[in-house]
Length: 515
Image 1 (cartoon, rainbow, N blue to C red):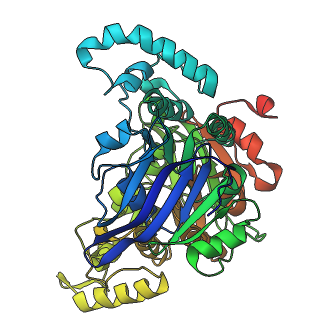
Image 2 (cartoon, rainbow, N blue to C red):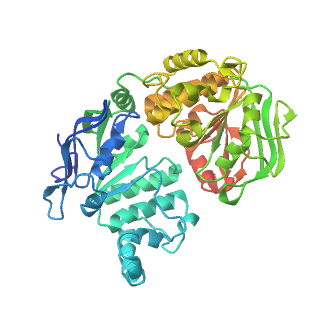
Image 3 (cartoon, helix red, strand yellow):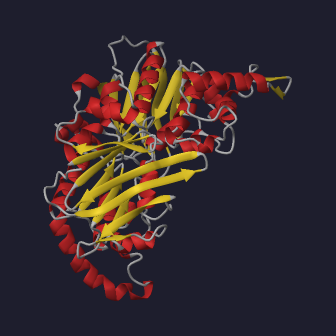
């Protein structure tokens, strides 16, 4: 393999890594290296082995076979002690997870210093730390208010703190997992400009992403895993999206496209809805969803989307304002009532809210319709009928599992999402609430989610698509509204909007400023 960073020394070498979990081989003889000053993108389907490989690198898992070697300050590669995150940190490996690991009640400075000094020496260390961090911020462009509490920072600022934590510990290798999943387009652009600057100063960077556009724009080299094996390792120059998608999935991936369609009457109407507390509260929200349309809700995480989803799915009642379905005001709010009324939801957190982990795939598929005659008779469950439906759904939605009796918690994120989709869409709901439906999914699973949401739209259902992925919103939505600090803008036709304007509005700029 020839480096795209000519003549740069290797700073990280994973050699013939194999990791098994029972009968499952998560990594199969994977070798990968990283050069000084190089940005390497790591791609693969859900369950392809990317996270397992990075967990081995960071010491969370121990490989059954193979070694990890990291270059020291003198440039010599030294084998890393397996299964020791402490050894990985000391060797100069920093990792920024998709879900940040910050103490919300502490300041940015306190979070960066945590673990580097005894608590008793914090006061004496802070002056020196501030000077060092000031130099780091000036060189990297990662500016942040060190005195601000984490709870008061934006998502982009929290990410900067995570990266500064790694740089403060003299990281020579930085790993980022889905780094733009919760960023606005402008924040994403700033992040990659920063990463390129850090790479030019000699930092080796690995980032995991499912967004092929940013992979092509930001990386020097691309590694692809499929089924636990490395199937590609090549310079980014000369690659294209179609080629990468096929390498990830092993076949061509058709992209779903929204076609013009005349919407029908109003299905779901929220009028002046106010509820919730703190940053996630809603303030006098108006929303109208029409039959046969997809209404997109754009916004940075934590700006009221969660509360909006709870109101629509019956998990939270408005303090004031009204919710109407098919012209009839809903006076009592409950999840069961909303399901019975024809409102189905794809929750944002599929692991926490989408499944009951210890229950089987078949039980999870039937859980919301368990009281219906097809699933029970005279108070007794019809296990044969539940199993038969599960078998049909597993085939129709390509749920990759060991049959309907397999515990749902053992499935990958993409396959758990397919369980949720099958349960949600096969009930023919009149309203579908889809919250971050493709977050963390590979290109193949994402294409399947998009196709099924468009099919629901075609048969006359109304779909509310809450997403932080502007490409997804622009591709699927007929109209888009922006939510910021609990205030929802008027929905506009998608063809009248662009990513830049939406990104500015997501960041809280007025329409005039966005223009």
